[in-house]
Image (tube, rainbow, N blue to C red):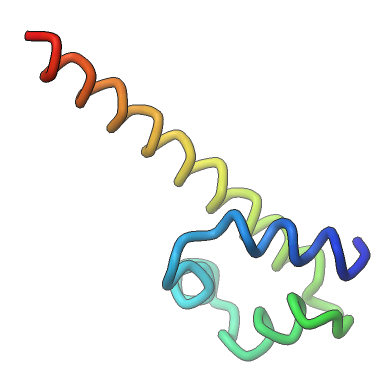
Length: 75
């Protein structure tokens, strides 16, 4: 994963996501920040999987919330 791809992924995250990802997956916040700054470590695969899981969950929550809002507005 190159630097541009890392930045693209980071840009999809909401504010506070890096801290949440670290706490949820037993990863150090600083290691996650370093990952997005282009440094490589033995935890890269774990960080990538944790971030992807977080983005998928967050986007699904956003989709569900939007659907609920539309239903309320149409009622």
